[in-house]
Every structure is written in structure tokens, then in C-alpha cells.
Length: 225
Image (cartoon, rainbow, N blue to C red):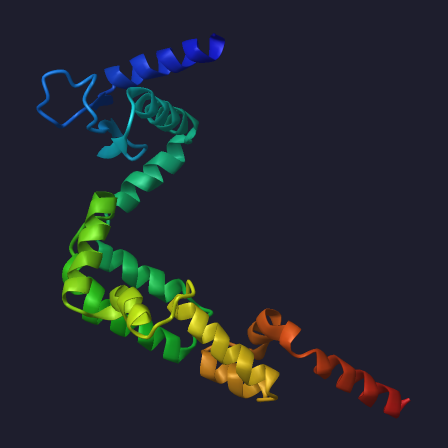
């Protein structure tokens, strides 16, 4: 009962701060129709948000309670940082993000930059970070699918090739490196092909495929004693 009371108080406070649950349909008796509930609220950065897809009003209330508690537990300084970040344009954010990826090789940086310049920035460069929603992302992916570009066509290509296993593009990359190393291709070559900054990264990921290398090292040490 105490938990229900706290939930009810959180609900009332959030409604007073501009949060609510509702239905977007025009049914006369919305409490009994099958259309989902939606919620509207302000996040920690002060941006108004909407979410939908809640089958019951209780589910919508639970989500609003979760948001309310998250806002209460977010330090003021962190909320201010989120607010400032939300004002950034995506192009500015992407540029700063790429500059921080110091573990990228020059080739990886060029690949990511080509993807940004050719496919992502033309559609999203001027959009502010705090305006990104699941709908925005879904619309962008749909536009890529319609244009038959990028990784958005992966599932269709996989089906055409008759591949029934649940694979993603990274799986092919991993398969390539695994086969190279298990067949004796030098790790230095594989590290370069994979775009790893150093062979230490390659070794940490694929060392289980090179058990013989440990045996060879032990043999060399024994012969030197």
C-alpha cells in the first residue's frame, strides 16, 4: 500500500509539472477501446517528450513514475550538462565524437567520416541532439532502405543469399579474422586488415584461436634453457 501511495504522489506531481497519459484516438469510450496509451513529459534536460505503445493506463503510469524518479535522482549539474548537450547540432556533436576516437586507425577514421559525409550528415546534420526520438531514427532508416543504401539493406541481402542464421555485418568481419588466424595467417597482417590500432587489441579478442602459439613459445623457452 505504501508503494502504491508513493506511486500515486509521484503521478500527481508529474501531472502538475506537465506530464500526462492519454490516447490519440477519437473513440467515445477511450477507457475501453483497444488503442494504446501515450504519455507526455519533460525529461531531465527540460525537453518535452512523447512516448506511445502502452496497452494499459497502469503501464503508462508505471513509465511516468520511472521517469519522475529518474528526474529526481539526476544531479542538477548533470541535468545542466544534458541540457547544453541537447542544444548541440548533430553535425557538431559527430565531429567532436570522431575526434575523440583515438583508438581508430587512419583507415577506420576515413571509413566513418565517409559514412557520415555521404549518408548521415546530409539528412541529420542540422538537427539538435534533444530532438532525436525513436520516430526520427526510424524515419531515417526507412529513407535509407527506400534508397537502397548502407547497412539498412543487410537483412534483404541476407535473405537473398539464403542465409537463415541470425548474422550481422560484424559477424562476417569476425568470421574473416577467426579463419585467418586459425589457418596460420600472421596476427600482424590480420591486425592491419581489421584496422586495429595495435596487435594487442587483436590478440585480446582472438587469442583463443591461437592455442598453438603458446605451445611454440614454451618450446622456444625450453630450448633456450
